[in-house]
Length: 160
Image (tube, rainbow, N blue to C red; front, side, top):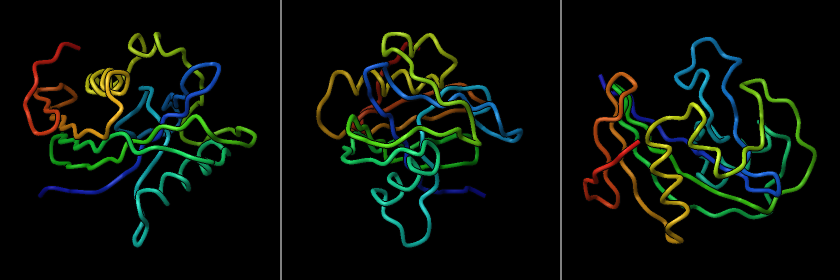
């Protein structure tokens, strides 16, 4: 049986780099020990925009003043289909707090690919740099291995 759900993911950009969460605090976590953005599941009756605002506030203590939808990513991971709305923001305010899901760290953009991240994340970080429009990305994983990728409906060759 395939499980399908929707999530948001947000990367905050600041003078010290990009805010990443090092997922270290949950035992049963598909992202365990990886660095990802902040975000989470879209709740019943909630829009992706409402979700990203809520999740950023819950996980970081920061309030988004403005943000941009940058991509819609479909993750196919074994028996899970996840549709993720990827946002970026460089306009937020407040005091950062401790997160119960992982350690929040600012990472210089040029150092992100050196971290333990999902292989497909390297693809979308490159696309975020190259493109200003909203793009579609499909990433297919089998047992944590990226087996195929498509951008805007077209299969791409990738090197990770």
